[in-house]
Image (tube, rainbow over all chains, first blue to last red; front, side, top):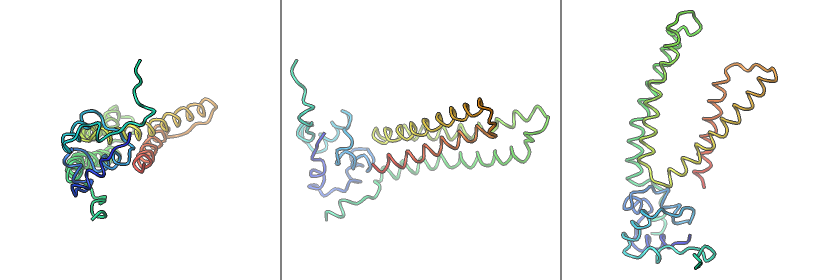
Length: 71
Length: 138
């Protein structure tokens, strides 16, 4: 899943460690999130959204092929 | 500016968790080493005394402390770190299982390998460490 967490963080002048402390996760986790190697569970996704004051879907973009199709 | 923001330094939270883990883990390791030396020096594990069995299981007590420290650490870390730890443990477990099956077949084939338990333990630990290093680099 793509995201623009890095841009949001850098816009605020935060290091990965500073963001990690604000989210209550490790710096390694923030790095994995930013590079798309890890998709957060819902509680963390909500914390991120709340921290940046944006809805989850404006921070995280699922790849098109993973879009939910209507049944 | 960007370089500063790309700092790979651990966060304060990381350092705090690490300190708590080290503070619980290393006393366990120290106690384990002390008990182990005591067992090897006074245990007479190769003697005839029935007490030797009690001596032999004595290191379990500090080992349980180490297990407690690891479990508490697992509860402190976040989901992603838990995922990495699980993958590393899975690697170690797979290596230990392969080693144990291989040694069991060698034994059936007539090859007596002394210290089988230690070999399996060593293989599992090595597998855990190597898997941990590999998944940590990803």
